[in-house]
Length: 299
Image (cartoon, rainbow, N blue to C red):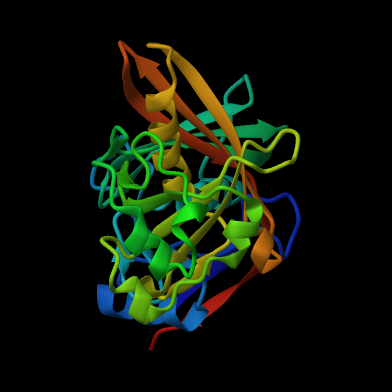
């Protein structure tokens, strides 16, 4: 038995940047234990397996694995899978050069809009499966210590640091500068002292016109020492930031750079919609470029 795969670099427009992803395009007959082994073999931050949807109105069911475990929702596998399936001919554009599909993920249904240039899919935008939410502000000193930083490196106004989610939870930590962002470190032992295994660090002091946020995501306990681009975290962050905006309604947007410290620059567009003073939706968009394709021997 063999399974076909393709790899893409997501949240970039050039190869060998962005976040690498393996997409197993026909994963029927592969059980969860074998999926985990395949994800570990690739060693990418995530590997996504495409299965038939339970609901015939949906395009496909996605199962997403890091090298260490399955996760209920993730951004770059969703964006990457959408663009791969479009390039495979399983998604076709309408007269306006767009297509709308829904993926089933463990966290829930994930709507995705794909933009085409002619017949070529160039960009996808997902809507997170849950409305963004975040918990109370956490004590900053233990978090700073776990990250090898000083408490003064953390921004502690408003709700931050806190746990935020819109399908997958992250410890959100705002830092004062790109220098502090670059200094942060997280090993397995320190990660076990934190309330969430996935830690999203960001600063708004980017010093770069057109980039409102620069970020890193560290999750050694998930088998991902550092992630070049994290769409689910970007969506959760958009919810946190939009909640702090004084306007009671509107669509808010941030351009996020991630992966610079790894030599894999990634660019994500994050949006959040607010109505009646509540954040009701978060979206993340980006592109992907093909890199490899082949077969996995399963027998």
